[in-house]
Length: 581
Image (cartoon, rainbow, N blue to C red; front, side, top):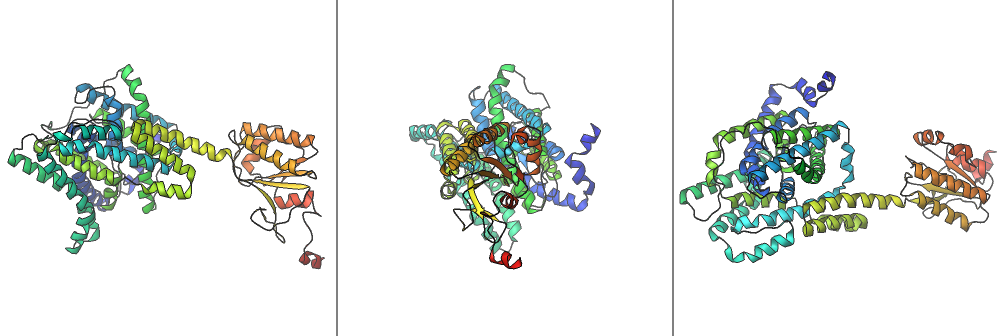
């Protein structure tokens, strides 16, 4: 047990921790803290939770990730998509604004954390591969549109509801006559300002003489300025009819276990699994991207442990589900964070904010938090994924369009489920018809190439079929049909060689198909051979009795097979070889 603890990432980077690294981490933490305060409040609002829960979810999870996470720059906390999924999951079970709603969100974080931790213990980090990048991009784009639309009710001060794009739009239209123009006068300028900050503030600061890096960091703290100004306006004018954040409890909540209710656990389990998968994939994608820039590596299995511990810590600290956020991680990286200790310092900053800043949040208009969310999520919307996948792969386009469409029409939970199932279905479809090619020898060489692409030497009595993919249950029958079809076309055939340089696996179903091919060809007077079979594949074949009944041989190379099976017809002497004799 002690040896396992010593392997934690904290003991790796902690060995070289010094004053210079501490300073870099502390500076990064201050910058991320300033950015994270309005974000945490806004995302809690998106999840339908009290704003302080966003702050609570930004304290203990960062400490837990610093101990267990493998990325040195990933910043963990509430994010837009997970907040929306939390609202969708808990909204079906409890009324928003009630104690039961908040308790269910806390339990959701705990269940998600346990699932992630279990996956990490069993080294299931490879599960991230089951969601393709195009599908994730389509899901995030659709979710971004839903999130942005859902926040318009706060921008205009109307009462609108819905968990999909159509319901939200219809609800907004139905309440268009109830627009609070004072709220709109705050929300719309705040959104326009934040959009400008993202694109226009950095060039302005650079023109004023600031360095590009510092200008970029200051531009990302624009939401803090918007929050401060809006609080001042609301407090000075004592605005009537404008929805404010209101009283926020000062200080930290007492550490406590979630309220365990077996019926509620089962009701939330499916949503927790989806949140875990999406959160893990999003987090790993960000962590890998940032690690690559510094020639570092992350461990997906350790990331599962880190995120699992973070979510359990969030539940104990009165928060809701968290994961690694793209925007704050980039800021953390650009600000110079060197180790996960920067996250722990950020947690201290957020904790101090709950003691000293919460009284000032009373007059914060919800419209400004909504503007912060809208600007943040619209930066994630990427419709170009549709055109890029259409040009490159129609199958990927179908996956993206399906995920995006279902998310927009039926909501995020159906969308992410469709994304997972579509990713698996696309994989099965693509691999169910593996690329195969009849090959021949390039004259004067030992190389073999596709007869449809190159001018090669072939012979009637030998058929060489190159298989460019592993063989398993989904494509085993396809190979059978392919071989039988090619054999039926050639009455002079004596040998079939399956060339297997790209075959990394042959499962039991595929082995049975190979046995059937062997028997069928034997009945036709044709021998079945293999060439260029990889060592691990041969090891598995030798554990069966297949090789004992094989009518042909297994050759080290395709060239050796041609030399033995058809030395005169398939291997004609070239002018150079004749001269050599």
